Length: 285
Ligand SMILES: Nc1ncnc2c1ncn2[C@@H]1O[C@H](COP(=O)(O)OP(=O)(O)OP(=O)(O)O)[C@@H](O)[C@H]1O
Image (spheres, rainbow, N blue to C red):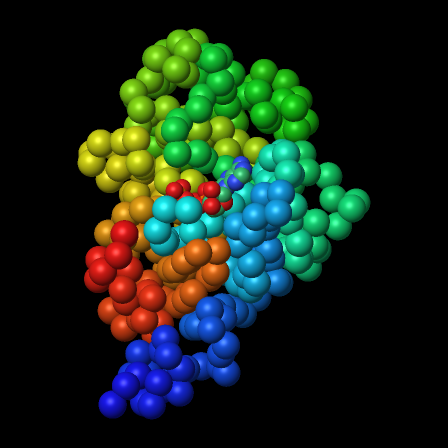
C-alpha cells in the first residue's frame, strides 16, 4: 500500500492524521497559538524576481522559544529578518503579507523601524560588538532610545543587563576595555546584553552558537533557558540537538516553504510530513 492510499496525501506519513486539508507544501502541524506575541499571515519574500519564502502563516507565543530548522538556503534567516524588518535594509528585497505584534501590523506604513528593532532585538551568527568599551556597548542603544537620563541610571542598566546575560562576573573589573577584546562566547553574551538593554519583547537569534565552542555554546543555551521567562525567542539553528534541547516548538523550512511546525518533541519524534522525517533522520542535508 502506498502512502497516498493510506493518508490521501503523498507527503503525509501513513497512520498520521492530517490536521487540515492540505495542498502540497501547505504547512502541517500547530501553526497557531492562543494569545500570540507574533502572528504572521501569508508572508512571502522575494530577492528581485527570486522567491525566497512564501505563504508563511505562523503564530509565535509569549515566552516561547521556537527553533527554525532546515537545509541551507531554505529561507530561515530570511524569515527571521521579516520579524524586525531587517529585510528592508537589503536592496532588491520585497516582503509581502502581514506580521502582527500585539495586534499591529509591523509592515504598516506608520511603523517606525527604530523602536521596532529595539522591541524585536537581534543576535547574529558572528558576535558583532561595537568597537567601543564593554560599558558603552550596553549604554549606547539605551541612550539613543532615551531609556536613561543620567550616569546613575546608565550604570544601573549596564550592570543589570550584563548580569542578565550572565557576563557580569567575568567583566565587572574591565568595563572600560573594548568589547572586541572578549572571547567569542563572551562577545556573544555581550551582544545579548546589548539587545536586552533596550527592553525587547522578542529576541531573534540567527545561529548564535555557530562560531562558539561546546562550552560557550552550553553557556548560551543556559542563558536562553533563563531568558525565556521574560522574552519570546526565535532561533535559527543548524543543530537539531540544539533545537531539541532549548525550544518549545520547532518549525521546519524546506525550499522556502514552512513545511511543518509543532512541539519540538512531536516534530522530532513523530513528524507529520515526510520531508520533515527525511531531514531529521539525515536522509538529506
Ligand atoms: N541578500 C540576498 N540577496 C539575494 N538572495 C538572497 C539574499 N539572502 C538570501 N538570499 C537567497 O534566499 C534564499 C534563502 O536564503 P536564507 O539565507 O534565508 O536561507 P537559510 O535557510 O537561512 O540558509 P543558511 O542555513 O545557509 O543560512 C537562498 O536562495 C539565498 O540564496
